[in-house]
Structures are given as structure tokens and as C-alpha cells.
Image (cartoon, rainbow, N blue to C red; front, top):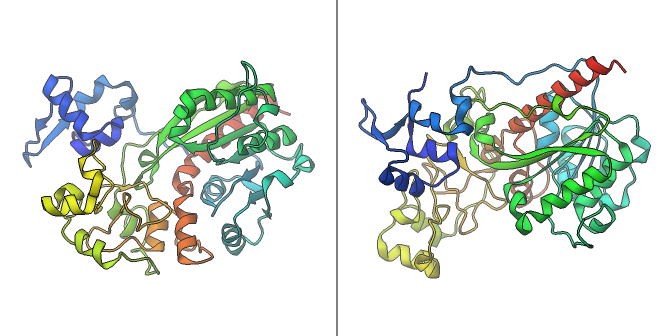
Length: 410
């Protein structure tokens, strides 16, 4: 049983910066103590009881697993390289159709699952009315777009031209029992909260009650990456929305070592694969950064040269010139591993992560192959929903549908 948490771990648990924790330490809100064995500054587990959102640390560990009592069918929009679809498949959900616009992502889906019905086209061109009565679940990671407001209330028709409108249209056409939209955490604050309000209003208009949207930190769902996602869950109005429960978080947090080395997550070390490289100038700078360090660990003059005008601006900018640590989860992966401001340098070698290392951090299985150029493969993986997180969400869907069918006996 874990008794102490490092400053870095508590920062992740609470979604606050280390600077905020140091400020709390000074004003007495949360005071770090010395760990008896290492003498490092840490927090005792009991100190974290003051935070309601960390109650899972003190409860008995629960597994989210639930076996489907019958066949449950899904349609997925904006499917990308299949992270969400694989996770739902692992949870026992049957995929009727997947829609994706980007060609190489479609090739990835076809290559790995020839039996899947992959529809390569702009979602605006596709009618799904033929699936009505066959679909239990509609999912989609639609891009976050602002709405134009017509009067005081945003209606279904007012959202035309946005990809959320297309998501809602497909839900309206197929009338699934449950629909789930997935997005970045910024959706909740986008356009001062008006965007998410509009989405809830539209789903309500087409016959779905929305469970209060929540931010999920995927490190608590067997993903070795500090990635955060928002889930919007709509339950058809003829059903009791209280039957749905979000997946419960796990206490164990997996690290980069768990992702790339043989262990609990994978039964062998990460396979060798192609990857991009840094320009010589950037490589020379990153050579000076220690494991777990970033630009502030460079000599002062090199900090100024490398950061340019950003050196004099506020904020930590902790993703710049960043070398990952074996003993922590990876930072959120981006679509391009060598771009400035979001460097994710390998802990030991001065290079970006390879394609297969990227895939491991997103918990794709090793036998899931990606199509297209190396840059296209990075983009597909960087945009994906982490597979293990998707699986835990799948268990929640299955549990909900099992309850619904056991109560209604349709």
C-alpha cells in the first residue's frame, strides 16, 4: 500500500502545477513532509483526504470489467486510426460501421480489421438512417468548433456547418440507446462555456438527456500518459440516465518504463520501428537536458538563445526542450514529435519517440499496424483516443446496457 506521493504525482492527481503546490506549502494549505527513507519532500497519503476528487485513493480498488449479456452494436464517427474502436472492441462491443475522412487512417483501419465496415468520406455526405433500430451506441471524437447563436437558445438547425451538428444528426437518424462524444478538456471552457451549453441543448432537443460532462485524466485508466479528455454522454430520454456510471479510476499510475519495457502493460520490450529525428542544432541543445528536465536546466545563455522571446514571457513552458523520465508517465503526445514547444525527447537517447514507442504510450497493441508515411503515422497516433482508456469507457457502456436490458426485458 502506497503511503507517500511525490510532488510530481500530487501535481498530476490534482491537475495543478508544481508552483501551485509550492505556494500551498508556504501558506499551509498542503505542507510537504520528508519521506523517512529517501528524505525527499513528499506528501503523506492521509494529507490528501481533504480533496474530494481523490477519494478513490482511499476506497477499495474496483475493476470496471463487465461482460456483455448480449450483442451490442456501435457506429463510430471521426474514427481516426481506431484507438476508440479497439478499446470498445476489447470491451466486447461490436462495430457496425466507422466513418473517417482521412485516407491513411482509413487504410490503417482496413489493414488491421478487414471485416470492419470503413466508410471513407466526409460525414456530411453520408446518411445512416438505414441503421436505425440496429444501433445501441454512437460515438465520435468531433473537433471543437464554435457555434453561431440564433437568439437566446442554440437549436439543432443553428449548428449546421459544424461537425458536432453531423454527430447529432447521425444520433437523430439512428436513435441509439446511448451516444458518447469525446473531446479535449478545453471544450468545457470554449467560448466561455457557450459551446458545451449549445451541445447539451442540441442533444436535449433530439431526445437525449446529457450526463454532466467530466474531464478524465487517462493516467488513472492504465494509460502511461498525462492526457486529459472530456466525455459527453447522452442517454435516450425513454431510459433512466442514472443507470449510467463513468468508469472508476485505478490507483496505480503507469510510467514510461511500463510503456516501453516488458512488464504489466506489455509482455515484451517495444519493437524497433522508424521515427523522426531532431535537427543537429536542436539535438545539441537537448543533449544538455537531463532525464526529466526541460529548458530551465540549460545554461542561462543557451536558455535565452533557444527560447528567444519566450524566455522573457511568463509561464513555465515546461514542454519546451523537454526530456522524458522513465519513472513518470509521458506528457501528452502531439501529432508531430519534433516540433518546437512540445518536445518529447527519449529519456536516454537524444531523439523523438519512434512510431512504435508513440503507439505504446497510447496503449495500441503491437500488432496494430499504421499506414502511410511516418509523419502520417505520428499524426494518426497523436490524434487517437488511448486504447486502454477507451476499453474502460467501453465497460461503462456495457454495464449500462446490461442494466437497461435486465430491467426493461425488451
